[in-house]
Amino acid sequence: MDLFEKCYQFSRANEIIAAGLLPYFLTIEENHGPVVRMAGHDVIMAGSNDYLGLSQHPEVIEGACQAAKEFGSSCSGSRFLNGTTRLHTKLEEELADFVGTDACLAFTTGYLTNQGVIPTLVQRNEYLISDKENHASIVAGALLAKALGANILRYGSNDMSDLEANLKTLPIDAPKLIVTDGVFSMSGRIVDLPKLVELAKQYKARVMIDEAHAVGVLGKEGKGTCSYYDLKPIKDVDLIMGTFSKSFASLGGFIAGERSVIDYIKYNSQAFRFSASMAPACVGAVRAALRIIRREPERVARLAEITNQVREGIKSYGYKIIEGITPIIPIIIGDDMATFGAWRKILDKGVFVNAVIAPGVPQGQQLLRVSLIGTFKQEHVDKIVTTIGEVGKELGLIA
Image (cartoon, rainbow, N blue to C red):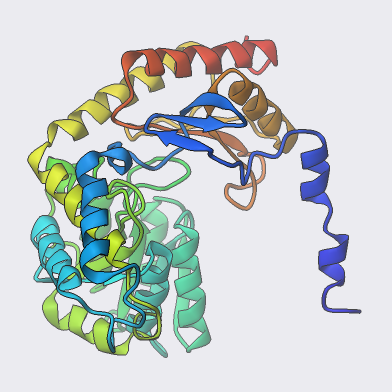
């Protein structure tokens, strides 16, 4: 059979497009913060990871522009060779100070960060223990580590009993790394980090936490899951990973921890050494966003207020949701076409949410993923809740 035969036979997307229900790759014509323009209509964006609403902040935009003026549109090479500017080194110093570690290393994307860190640290005959709900980038990193001879174990989502059962099977002195999301991207649940850290210390494992959806959302000044639980970086959690495409309103990723560990990754990670450096504009935007986050902690508090209003409002209609406190609110629908149909009606009424099906979630857990922005006004909050409620009643999803 020809290599491309599977491509020629792939028709699912076109079928959904023909039905007018494809919720992916929609074009945003204009972006004015919480409101965007799609197909000539203004739509409230309740499906973005711009949790603090900084992507439209004048100071962040100016930070990007100024960096581009100073260093151009690209570094035109890898960090390892010619792509390290003073902007990159200053950003890494500032991030290390923010999260409370000795050192930090910035990667070109968050996805690349996990692909670059995990197989660099977990090598032949060593062990990676990963939560089954972890982000696809962690899964990709695990597969690379496995290809290089590492042993991969997976435990039930946020199931500390299952984690311990896995740890018990391993030699106590074997090198091992537990990797988990801080906030799980689809369910919005927060990892039971205190128990995980307790088990890691008991079974002599290192801990790496992916804070992509936690920084800017949880903890003092939005510092993330460690701060939320009053745990200490390095002392309790060895490595903190994060992305710049969410609360930091840019593009890229980072890993932070002990200086000797970060230096090892810097000189040995293939993904880091052979990828082009973060563009100056991206670095400038992150630095500006970080300054705002540290200067205006009330943004995190406002996001929490909005989250509580929307979550309680959706629950009041009788929807089945996954409980939590983060601005990710998953509404369980349980069927592909029903999920697409609800998404379409909600969009037609002026609100954009995400429709998520397998493999993003398990079969039977298809959902509408509402994610909130801290710069929503009360009129936006009310519109999101009432629209989702109205559509649920129209389609018979709720009583």
